[in-house]
Length: 280
Image (tube, one colour):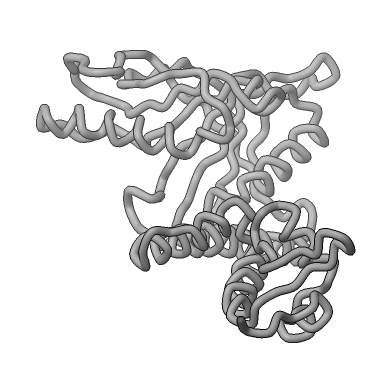
């Protein structure tokens, strides 16, 4: 029988602390080869070092303990590699999100307050094809993408194109409670027979305060904040639902730096604002 390593010896060889090894034993991740029944001392085989090294690297990649167990217990190399690949993909997605957040923060630090241009615009009632639902913020992007795909597909199946920029209406509850009614719409010039979730609607007329957001949608909050600050300073009240118009977006180019979105809020004068809406 090969000699066993004490937990201290195994700790040194594996680069895992004794506290960590005890924890991995407690959660069933790395069982000692033997535990002395009288003293409780843990002993490990030398061939367990390879397992310890695997665990260490997976945990450095922030893989949860239960997923690490799945990797160690995989039936074959294909299953093991698939589990690791899935985790790496999630890590890459988080890295992309972190990179985008860093870039957004740097841009925010560079951007002086009051730098955002605001235009006031009166829009008439707009016939449109729409899909609406109560949506949570967590599910918004996937729902939004699928809904626009369906609307554009409905028009394309009838040989039609949008009669203007696609847009969306967002109820106040979306921002206050992280879920609320969202209506995505595509302007139309002709009557369209409905299919699936699509419904004809009329986007109401409104006086809009508009600013253009350049770039990815992840940092919409920058443009929302700038517009909110401007309207507060000019004593203008926002009426819901607020709007977004997608001038250039994912449907046009994969380069998020080229995207342009109009953030458009219906506004009304407060009782302290006697002058008409002015353009900037």
